[in-house]
Image 1: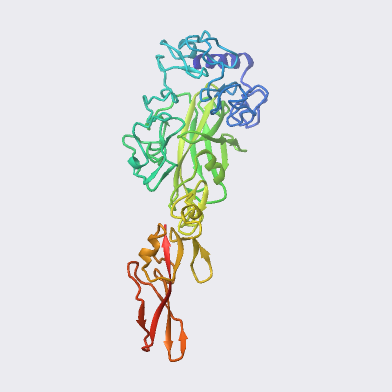
Image 2 (image 1 turned 180 degrees about the horizontal axis):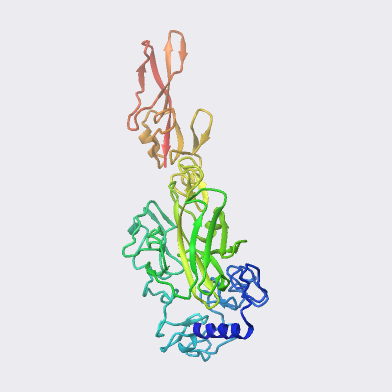
Length: 471
């Protein structure tokens, strides 16, 4: 298919002459595909789908994307239409069962072999073709080739088996890595034989290619001689905290820079950030993201040390040749102590709705009648030192360990608070007068005395106790 397309473009240039403007001016007749805007001759362009979605095309839920030539949509990730399965190729279907609508491996430029129809009727299964270079079919629920998972098939992996404390593990949209954003705790990257791209365990970078393109197996491949060349791909920062993250690229092509039709920035694990915009200088491109845009494609959930994201620049020429380059950026909150919880920065040591871990709300785990703890004699809050903390009052002699246990809690540590585990109140007699001293409770298991003696020798008697309890 690419050879046919390249020959058509070559004959077109012979018949029309070389109308490309080498001086940097625009050419009204040039291919606009890749500029990120839907032009009159296009159905879509990059992330601009002209308002279309799987549902508007009469298909089931899923992810609609734009085909590389901008003339049609890639519907392979959409759910099946209601007509899929009736044995006929309906208007909103590509094929149906054994009915391939006259298409074959050779017709797709993939040599000889056996072409099949995808179960959702939205595309072809090309694994049986002779010269297939794409990864095995993602979405069929079976792990094959370079895939590390497929849908619910995680090959027995869990958050715990990957080194996390807990959470829910899922598969990335392209089946080439596991999505650990739903896991909690720490993670240890495992690149194995991979030399580039994200590792399949944590999504951390395994390296970048100094030349060539990183393939799905994490190996650098030599680009086709006719493909564009990325001279440089840089960003304004390597650790991004706030404001704008600006990517810049300089691209050339063996057939002239005007042969480059555009580029896009993607997440290797799946998802597109947007199309690169051209600048005044010929062959120069840029794209700007903020934290919300990053989170929309690759959700930000991670510790205070930040989360690592690999950004991949892809550029294409008119013949369909592609080239890519990766940049690894550490995305962190502006405050060093804050962690990412669903794209927002939270102090897990003090946030009442994210206490100790993301989305752990103290109001949900504490007893309904819990009295908020007092941090500094004035401020009342629940989350102290990452523990949902409350106070329990009693007029009976006991210990904080027993008193907290009766409320389903444990005796809480005293990080950042003036008392140790609570406060005890006594009343003391001095002649005909009474006074009421208070003293800190210094041990969780210590049962308070019912009677004691003040430092001046006055007799004192237990009055009340209040313990700090944590969950």
